Length: 252
Image 1 (cartoon, one colour):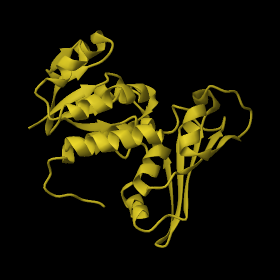
Image 2: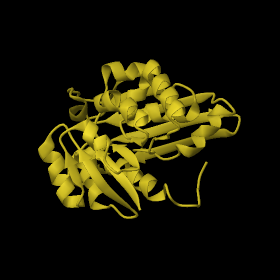
Image 3: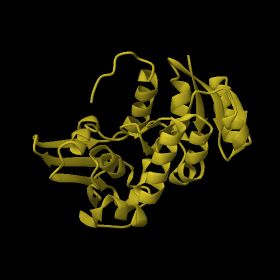
């Protein structure tokens, strides 16, 4: 059975531990040791206070469910310690220098870096953009003003630009657009809207290419235990982990 090292013990970490079927959470690390202990007790794994000791544990793959800063701090160490890596906070890869460094490190180490689909659908077929370039790749995200830390009495656009620019102003709202960019090989355009009439995050994908065009709309239900987390994002990482060892690979 595949052995997981869990990096980050927030809401998604708890969901992974609670639904560990087909894999086991063997090692757990969080900068707050008490959080790691809680998940270790839940998963019957081992909590670690020291990150190096965590990496030396008997694990097959490290699953990051922490933050963009954690990815930047630990991703290279994971790969050079001969562990595969799942990155949930894909916004860290908006930095092209860091992205190229992680890509080259993974190649040199002979390891894989996995990116779950997160809070959207349709990520697999965006990969055709690396063969036949996309003519249009736009993500329109609508959130409540409160979730964006602003006040607004009516629907209004608060950002329009490229995914790698959005992270500078709204670092907590770029994971989806960066995942799209990585899949398609093209920096996605982003529109970020604030709407006081919505109580859920809405992602709209507008995609055009030689294949034709498509439109996808996803309205995310919050995670039961944390309104700030998309439940679909949590489910997508569980799906990835459960299928890593499956001899059938479905999707592009």
